[in-house]
Length: 226
Length: 295
Ligand code: SF4
Image (cartoon, rainbow over all chains, first blue to last red; front, side, top):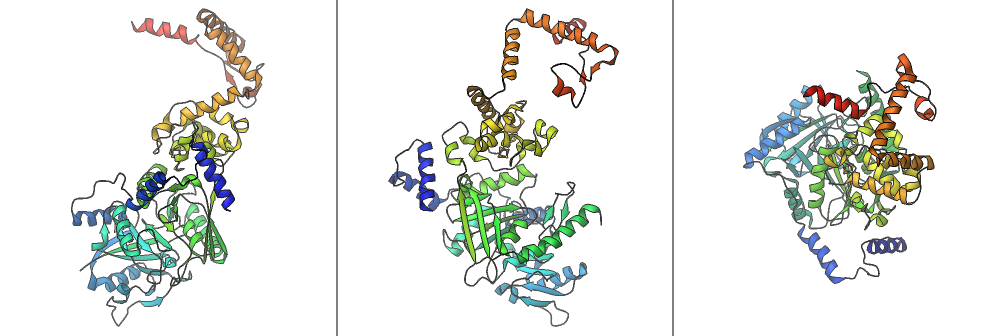
């Protein structure tokens, strides 16, 4: 293992004209460490003007990517979720994780969707997740793995409903990474981070675009305001 | 349902069972992030995601040039990838995997292995092909290439089609086996113009042609014919005379049909199609005539 690694790194150094170098070169090490520590931004698109514009762009871009999008008050989440299921003729059943924000939803006592806890085994028609963040530049949702929002809920059910708090919608990906570093600590990551932009699709057959290749056929995004 | 849709539904159902039953999922990586030890996969379908979520073991096979320093560096290239590949602003799924499932995770693989491959990359460094290591396999060069449009992907005979293949394949399997790829270019330059990573593809194809020439790999008829052509090309009056002679005699030979279905020394061409006979004189004579009539 280490043999192959040394061989490759040795060849890299040689090709770069640094034959004989050991990798212990302090100045180069420091340059690498600085780059990783400071993670400077590259070219970032100019953000939409103001928080409302960012949310507006997030919704428009997600829609352009094939998702359906609505903005609802926190108290109306249960009604919006039920209405989505009904409008697609789906049973009132949901797969969802243990996120506290999901538990706090004010489900009605009568006619509320049946909630199944835990990861999906592929037999659920609809899944409900709470996103960590949104990126307005492309209408992208950011979710990560764990008991709160199991990754299988993002991919196995044919219908995926994702809640995202309006306050968690940033403009660019870089802002989301800063937020993630604050949450998990710099240099550490959850097992899986999913950036999701619209429902699954394929154009591999006759170059015809069809939704629902291996992931959800429908993605419904609910932007939650207070 | 229309046919493509029912085919996709069928594939979804059958492959879903395979994804659920598999013990090991193997993916490549669009990027590897040094900052966090993360592998990144970009898809529209979600196949890569099922592969790295459902099986017990996730193995990543990727070559070393996929490594970027930070999440910021990944984001910058990510903005180029989908736009150049499919014209989307962002692909549907960009998935970052870091390590196996955590203690409290209810799903995800129990093991995660990353295998870094060199596969010729370290020897490309420091050569005139170094720029090619920036390639993100978006395929823009290929989609804009007139040669690729005419011959299609399989004609390239190896993993990478289009201009990127014409540059990469000789580095991976040798210019002696793949020298015809960098030769099959019109050098129109569209590949370089559309490449989001600013890779000078035509320049590198030219380097391959030089190397092939230096190593005397081109077939002897090829070089002797080129020498013959060069002799004439350096003597314009002779060139014009020979061109006129050839055009006229071919026209006369072809008679009213205007084409040849067999011709000595052009068997490879006429095997699958006719060779049209020259009509209306040489380029120079037509040029003179047209300029004269415009005045
Ligand atoms: S050479 Fe450039 S255009 Fe072609 S696939 Fe690579 S990055 Fe894309």
